[in-house]
Length: 160
Image 1 (spheres, rainbow, N blue to C red):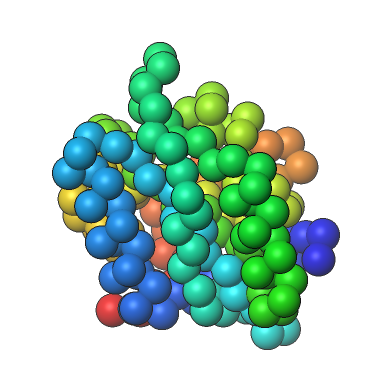
Image 2 (cartoon, rainbow, N blue to C red; image 1 turned 90 degrees about the vertical axis):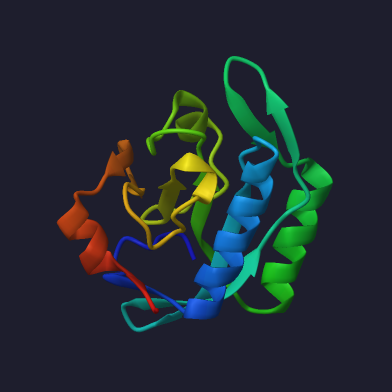
């Protein structure tokens, strides 16, 4: 798979949303950001999320907050994806305040496939992935592009 550009909808089951909310909020209680990765399968032009992954990560503070995921953990995740026939389609991470794509987010993404999504959740996940003020970006040939609220609601369908 070298592109999600043709995918018109990403469907996220409620249990994946709930697990992600808990992970973001739990890290946020200690003032830390957290990355959660969503993988799944493509059915025609729809990407169906099946699994939430919370890779081992190290929170740090250097010119702002961030997380580091090491090479061994990335390898472990890639082996898991391969053996389970799933693709990594969406990265989710929290910010302490507003949701936006920082320079670090742009330069060091976990999702690197064109058409993949990056969901940024503000306030350390206080209102969850389905909550207010989240920001959604899609990877294009020119980099990460912010999607409008209308586009976000059309492409990223999260079950209640």
